[in-house]
Each structure stands twice: as C-alpha cells, then as structure tokens.
Length: 68
Image (cartoon, rainbow, N blue to C red; front, side, top):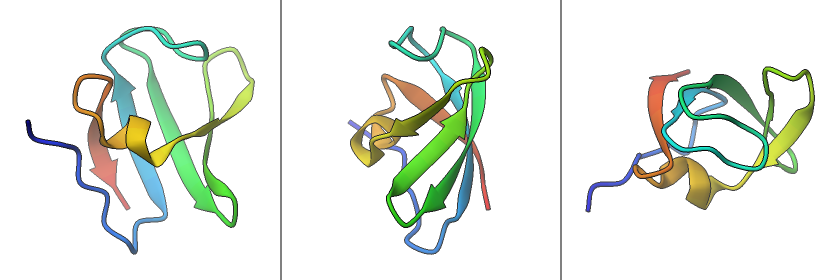
C-alpha cells in the first residue's frame, strides 16, 4: 500500500479527506500547519483540531494535495 509521504521540512499541508472523521466530512479540504506540538488545522465548522501524522499519511483516510 502506498502512503502519503510528508517531507520532514514540510510546514503546511493541504489535505482532502476521503472519509468522514470525528472532525471532518468526506470531501472536505483542510489546511494543516506544523507547530511545536504537531499538525493543527481549522475545519469547516471553525474548530481547530490536531491531526496525527499517521492519519495524514494514510491514503485511505486522506489525500495530500499541496505540500509547502
């Protein structure tokens, strides 16, 4: 299985979710930023969530569209 590769130097990711999660809906795009504590992003409802790297790397959960 191919996984979403996140380069070590990446600071921002634009992620499209392929399934519903507790914080996102299928098809929702979230921009997540890396800080000292991990990956955090603001979802469509306006709430901020931390996203586990394992979740972001899983191609069955999400698709990484942009890496910056």
